[in-house]
Length: 229
Image (cartoon, rainbow, N blue to C red; front, side):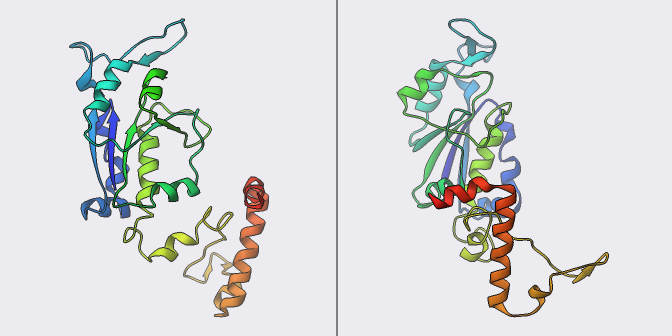
């Protein structure tokens, strides 16, 4: 799995992607990335990559000639993704699709800044717009790191415990995960639920399902509606 990352802040990478299980996977060659500095394709010696909007309005827009040249510098861009609040919200189901064929997967992640990018770039390269949530970030770099992390951790041999380690998580089970407990069995007067200490796997699974259903109904009822579709 390889990621081309287009950004005006190359120093932000690998960032969090260089730590933890994803960082170890990077060191082990399970995934790779390269960073393309958009300013290398600037229109002048000042490194300008943006300009005022046609039609007026606040905020600058990243220029199509600059972005086009940056994209064209990539020999094999694969699927190009631009992080934007206009795109569909990234879900675990989508992540599984993105990570389905890691040996062949190539993604170009366009990290926008300012007010956004010229629409003609999106149209010319058939770019997929993708949102990581209903809020606004200063730029796409953090969103790119979220995207890479969520995809890479699903690749074999990245997360310890194999397939089971990711199969029983929130959103993978059709709802939110049940409460988790570890040693000590009593902490500050609070005990671990007795069923988890019973060794009865059938009862444990039923308890976990009940807890998951209750938490999902209380906190994310929208997930229940999606499951029923």
